[in-house]
Length: 543
Figure: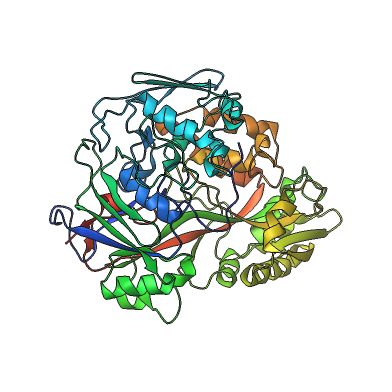
C-alpha cells in the first residue's frame, strides 16, 4: 500500500463533524424539501464515477449518492468520527493474521433502479478499481494487496481471486496483514455499484446509486442534477429534494461571490486562503461559527520531520524533544498562513476532533521553553549542524528561516536548502538524500487514527511503502502501534489517544506544528450544518 503525502487537504468531505445551525434555525424547525444550489469552479469536478473520482468536489457529491460497507454517522464529534456499519451489519470479522476480512451485509438497501444491494455490488466496486482499462486509477493504492489483484491489472481475469461474494457475505483476502481496510471502505472508491457496471476510462456519467440521492443529469463542464433515490430506506438524514450543481464558476472568488449574493448555497472555493483574503472580510461580515461563515479544525497537519536514519537524530530522542521545546509554534504558524484563522496550533499527531484525542501540554504551543530545550540539547547536538529541506514556496521558506533562528538558541546550526515543489516529495523520500529536517504536511484520504500514527511512524511504512519519511523504526513503538491497529470500537480510539501522547512525549519522532483549518461559507438559506470539515450535503437543509 502507498499513501500519498498531501500539501493541502484533498479529503475535505471525510473528517470532523461539527453540527450547528445557520441563522438560529434548528433541525426541528428546518424546512423539508426544496433544491440546494451548489457552485463549483470550472474544471474542478473530475468524475462522478466512484472508481475514478479523486477531487473534493467529486467526493462531496458522491457522499450524497454512496452506500458504503462502513461509514461515519452524521453527528457531532467525537461520535461523528467513530466508524460504524452502514450496509454491513457489524464490523467485519478479521482473521488472526490480518489477511482475511468477512463482511455480512444487511437487507433493505436498493439501488435507484430498484435492484437489491448484495455483496456482489461491493465486489464489483473493488474489481473496477483494478481494471486495466483505467490507467493511473488512484484507488489502486488501496486494493493492490488483495489476492489476485495483479491478475486483474494485467488483464488475465476480470475479478480478483481474493474477492468472493455470496449473497450477503463478502470475503476479501489480502497478501499481507491489513488492519485498516474497514476504514478504507468509507471512501467513495468503495461505494456499492451494480454488479454489471462496466468500466469506462472517461468515467460512467450516471451510475445507479444506493445512497439517499442519485445523479439524474450530468453534463460535464456545465451542470449536475441530483434528486432523491426513491428506494432509499437507510438511516442517513436527507432533507432537501435534491441538488443543482453549476460547474461554470470562473474561479474560487466567483464561486464565493455567488454564495454571498445568494445565487448559490455553498461552494468549495479551492485553497483555504481564498476565504481569508483581506478584501472579502468574511469574519467581519458574518462572524465566525455563528451564521454563515464557519472555520473548523481540518485534517491536514504540518510537521517538522526529523530524519532519524541520519546521525544527528538517530537514537537521539533528547535532541528531538529539545527541538520540540525550542520551537515557537505560534510564530511559525503566523508566517506560514495568511490569516490567524488559517491554522490551529498543535503538538500532537492526532487531529483534535478525533475520538480518543486528549489535549495535553506535551510541548509549549504559544512560545518556546528555552530552559527545557537547552537542558535536553546539552551534550546531544553531536556535530551541531543540520540540513533542512523545504519546498520553495514563499511561506514555507519564511517558516524554514524562522526554524533556523529558533534552533540556533540550542546551538544547532541549520542550513536551509530550498527544492522545487515538484521534486520535493521524491527528494525527502529518497534514503540517500542528506537531509536532517524537513517541513511536511499530511492529509490522508480516509479517516482513522491508523493513518496518523501507524502510516507516519511505523517502520513498515518507510518510503516507498508509506508516509514515514523520517524513517522512525522503533521495535518498541512498532509493537504498540500494531497492537492498537488490531482493536476496534471505543478501545481502539482510547489506545490510539494514549499512544498519541506517549510517542510525542517519549520518542518525539517529529515536531507537529499546526492543524490547517477548513473554512465554509453558506447562504442565509442553509441550516442543519454538518461540517466534516466541509459541509456534508446529505444532511443539509434549507430554511
